[in-house]
Length: 114
Length: 115
Image (cartoon, rainbow over all chains, first blue to last red):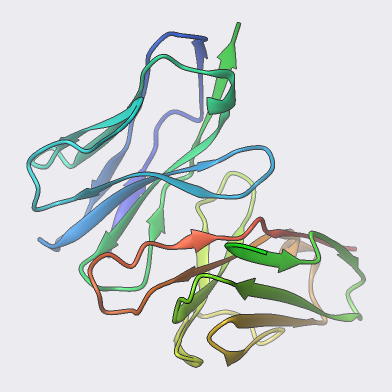
């Protein structure tokens, strides 16, 4: 069985600043994928960034980057130059190998202030 | 329409009603999913369909009945629900199961309230 833990129910960041959202996971599989999803108030869940466990290099998508620490089973999301549109619920998720199931954390609500 | 669409967006029903949720994907995917999202809980996978065949049922009560007539459409038929079934129901789709990068794309969800 796999688990995903997000220990920060809420976070706040000022516009243009940087924020890091934490995620830890547990799995006995060696082949797995990690994801960060964003769910804005409109509720459509969209994929922000993906990391393959076999890749040592941290994934980056524009202002979004991850810090993937495989030994520590940690997968944090860093948002640089935060914008008002970044305000949303952020979910960390894990999928093992070619399995269909995504295991989600409980989410972190990010507020962006002026 | 693009992506994954869901109707209705909001639904209020009594415990004795029968209603259906509809999901449609326009992405050419082969797999479709139903998730339940309750407050302060992780998303719960309910059902998975691959090429119209159900491949997972995560111990979902029989008052939820899925139907997948083709790879583009997915329904969730509801009957004699309980108030604790009130939640956001999300549909998702992805490419062929069993491939490494079958990223899931989500619909906007149906907010269900059971009175």
